[in-house]
Amino acid sequence: MSVQTAPRASSGSRLVASGLALWFVVALAVSLSGGLGRVPVPVIGATIFSLVALSALALRVVAPLRAWAAGLSVQRLVLFHSVRFVGLAFLVLHARGVLPDDFALVAGWGDIATATTALLVAFAACPITSSARWWIVGVWNTLGLVDILNVLRGAIQIGLANPADVAVLTVFPMSLLPTFVVPLIIVTHGLIFIKLWQQRTSPRP
Image (cartoon, rainbow, N blue to C red; front, side, top):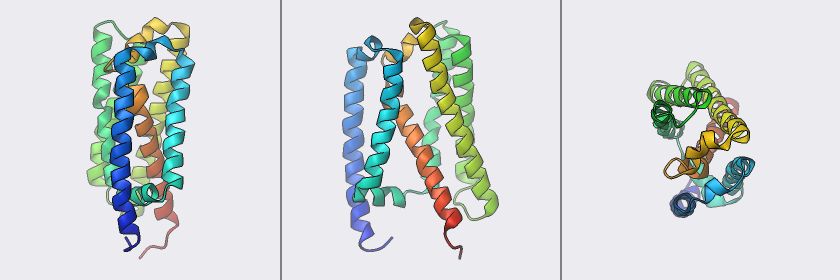
């Protein structure tokens, strides 16, 4: 990192911390208010992708944020996905009869598998020092993104057919998933793809 980039990265860290704190507070307020349960399912889906788009735009156009993202290691980004052990909660809710089979089992086991392999990939394939490691991270990231998009598709599809089946996802604390956690998961998948592309196209020592 150059001398000029370092202050931007430091400034970016402060911006990210402040932005995430504000975002979390707003998401928490919405969750505790119960407001998420009063909006149509498609609006929740649109909100998730709007948050992803706004985050991506900020990382692209705000120089300190761009420098901060450039300084992130692939390992840290992969380790973030250990948050997807939240899949255990889906299985617990399913066992209590709160979530239907066609969502809870797919989302639960898919997230658990992604979180478990994230730990393996983070410590076995990072840093990326070979073509084999590059492919391991790339395949894991692709499957992880497909999994989270499939979970979203399933939740929206079931919610459109019978909103009561996924109503628990609009109630605190599960409501923090669509308003905070899931957008961050998608954004980090995107950042990993960018870093893989940069490493693939940059000259190797």
